Image 1 (cartoon, one colour):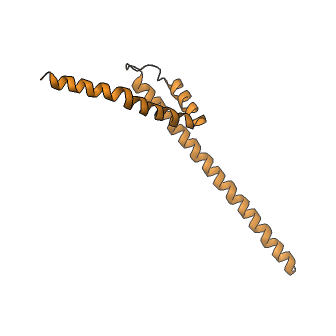
Image 2 (cartoon, rainbow, N blue to C red):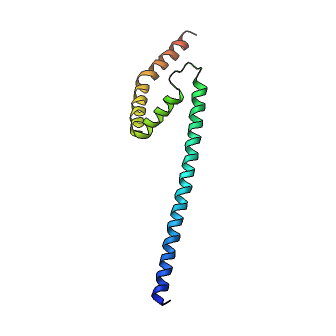
Image 3 (cartoon, rainbow, N blue to C red):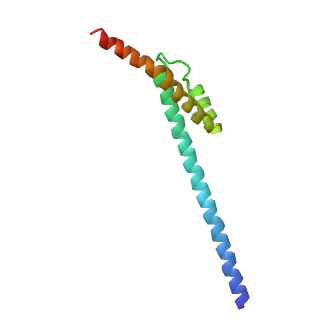
Length: 108
């Protein structure tokens, strides 16, 4: 083996180990993500179970998964609606609550 072959062997060995390292990391990330998905499903199932007999309707496992998919697909919607909700809440609900509290205090 001459010097050029030695250099090439070192480079080839490096490339092979680098590819194997990428494959190993990829496999471990895939397994971790599968574990997270199983955990997420378990949490959603438990939430649905807790709300099954409550007054709040529409929180079935299927619906909660659909809500999650919408959120993951359109995350900007949450920011928009929460900003609108906060504004409406401050303008409409808080004055009503203040008025009710004032009325309660005046009747004492």
